[in-house]
Image (cartoon, rainbow, N blue to C red; front, side):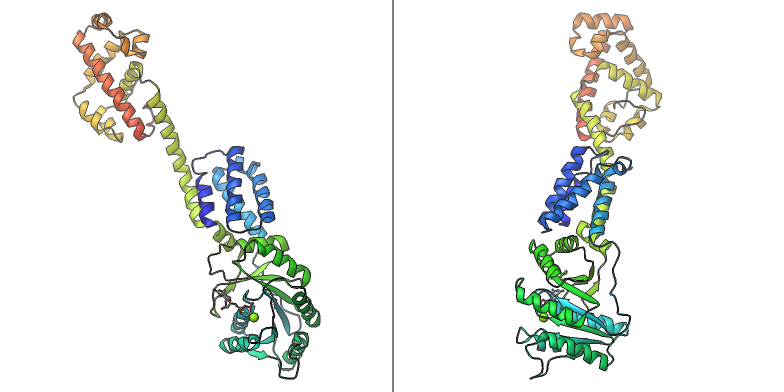
Length: 440
Ligand code: GDP
Ligand code: MG
């Protein structure tokens, strides 16, 4: 996603003011970038519509750097969808706080249960893990291992008591926590490979039986377009108070985060970033937006945009120079400018790409400029604009009029031809606009 968006904003580099066409092009690219990142289509549509509306509005027109403003808008909208502020866990007024985990099989519930327990212990809590995944033969054992690694207590069904009845285990677990003074209960539940009515009912029943303070929906960040359907199914089937985005250490840029947050309106509370129990962090919407946008890179890009814009202007000027005819009038004007600005050599030394010309004009002293001026002043405007018409009789007339010889006139025309060629060469290389020099 980031690469695509970076490319998108790179396209804005050379823009000063944004036209509606620029905005449409950019929005199209953002749309494609989000779809590439597997953000769900309805989410992409809503998002780009908002960005477009704002990008066409006044705030962008008034902005010093409209391209940067568009990035800002995209960033703000992303943060908005991702929940704005960082959301913390809600604790019960009277212990124990009950936190239930729900999600598809393999999404990372059991692993996260251990991570959460460890995090909470660090904060001085005494969490109890409750093993309600009685679906897979090894699930209880897996939670036992996780609990041990986290140094947390676990409540698991004993043979003959509650096996096969996850709702009873959940209820018993909460009771157990009350007796043993655990201030937090973390309920690990079963998942299926896909959305499943029986699974939903089981999770909903556990929720009803334990009345959790938080129901956290765990979703694999690598989930693609399915993220929307899965999240909606869990919201309708169980409902949840927050989201845990797992496996953010994978390739994902966070497309699933955007989809889930957008369609459910539920905040993402934690990001899980590895298999280890310490690989977890509170979810920060602004950081996620930056991750999606790779904002660091983009802001650098946009900073470069302004100078790139200036370069583009200079290049446009140079191109004009290259295509438009360079006339003797321009030549004369240039001479006068150069004379005004002092030493011609010094002047030429300041122009990149002018070394060759400087050498040629090394002996071009100011008196010569005066003579050149005299010759050009003896030409008709037509001759100045188009020196190609300077035949023998015209040259003779000009020589007489300026008090010079025909050889002088010939030399000037030759020098002018060289200068004109030089101008084209320099123009192709892109000469910056030198203040006071007019068109270079
Ligand atoms: P559950 O079925 O929802 O309980 O999922 P598990 O907790 O058993 O996790 C399924 C697999 O994903 C396991 O192999 C975990 O080690 C792995 N896993 C869980 N969370 C993460 C994570 O944040 N990053 C990575 N890379 N792997 C994870
Ligand atoms: Mg599990």
